[in-house]
Amino acid sequence: MTKKEIAQDFLILASGGQPKKAFELYVADNFKHHNAFYKGDRQTLMLAMEEAHIQRPNKVFEIQRALEDGDLVAVHSRVQQAGKNGWEGAVMHIFRFDNNNKVVELWDFGQSVPDEQINENGMF
Image (cartoon, rainbow, N blue to C red; front, side):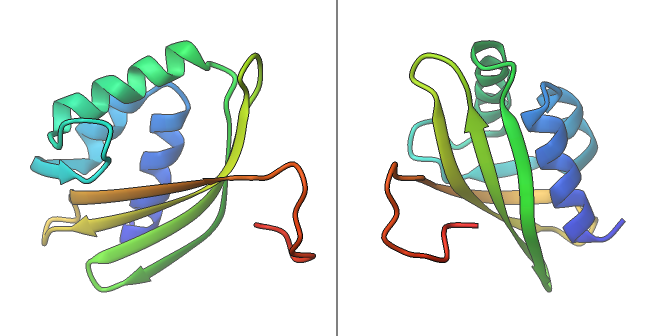
């Protein structure tokens, strides 16, 4: 698998209720992430992803595009969460890989889709 394919499969598994499998397959032991709302270690993020799936099991996650450049992969996605306090947004994940094609670092950013968009091109 290419790094781009690994990043996409990781996100599909993790968002689909299988973060433990995603981490076992693709994430290095020395992994760190940069999500400001959680500690920066592997275990904390995996557990947060499990909890997120329990809270929002019907989340829709759609990859819009993915780019690979050396040891970096960027994935732009659309996320829709139904229900009370539902959310729709654009999310960008940036992965850094080691020489064994394992994810060693991850950044993620999200932007809510506003009810009214001025930009006629939309976010996706």
